[in-house]
Length: 174
Image (cartoon, rainbow, N blue to C red; front, side, top):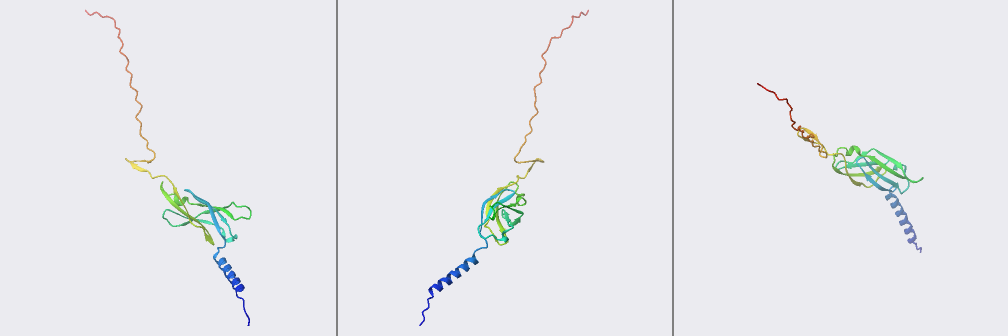
């Protein structure tokens, strides 16, 4: 009679299956972002590849929506800020075309970085861009921020000359 010991084989089989599942579930490279900033003209963040570098991680681009609009890919640039051998980049995107019509209003900006094999979670900030529109007052345009009131011309009282005596020679008539 042969007694088979399945314990060691079952353990090895479970470890192999777990390794395969972990490999399939892991993305090609893990990425972390930091230093997110948003202004009326740009969105910026630093992105670090903490996994195995992948050639498909670049180029990275910003996907941005302002207010309730749709996400749009904006012109983006990458600048390597990591040490040699590190995949750490500062990614900036130009959002001026999306904020140019805010006219002094405040809007929420949602943005995320994407590349061929992945995306980062969306980041959010608020901006107030542009100037309020001008208003028409009595036929002229006046900015609500600047009101110019005409000043009355300087009037200095006219000084009258004091009366003076008139000297005349006496005249005899007749």
